[in-house]
Length: 127
Image 1: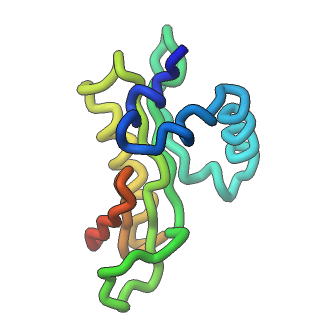
Image 2 (image 1 turned 90 degrees about the horizontal axis):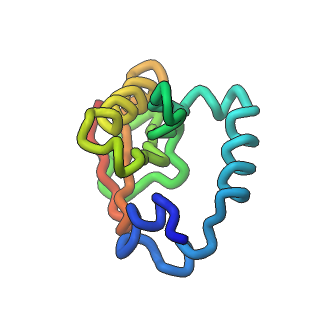
Image 3 (image 1 turned 90 degrees about the vertical axis):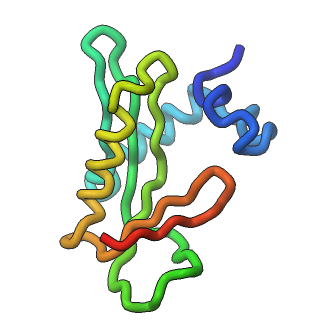
């Protein structure tokens, strides 16, 4: 059975990575992340009254600074994840999570935000 993330990232991430993902493993990872107040503050969720969580985004300080920054950045933020269930796409939920991630990586938390696309290319717009 194909999981939503397998469909969403097919052709963008290696098949072996997608095949290795499991609901149990992902649930355990998110449970640990959300239990840590320092980590959970960068997680934003889109919730539907009937379906529960239908989208999410997570962010924090950049893990690996990408090339192309000019060196003046004091703190660099990164969008780690951004996902919306297929039935809830094109409703502004992903944009809402993205906006909240960008705001949380804003001037008080970071001077630059970085997003890395599925192909590994960094995008580093200034805040």
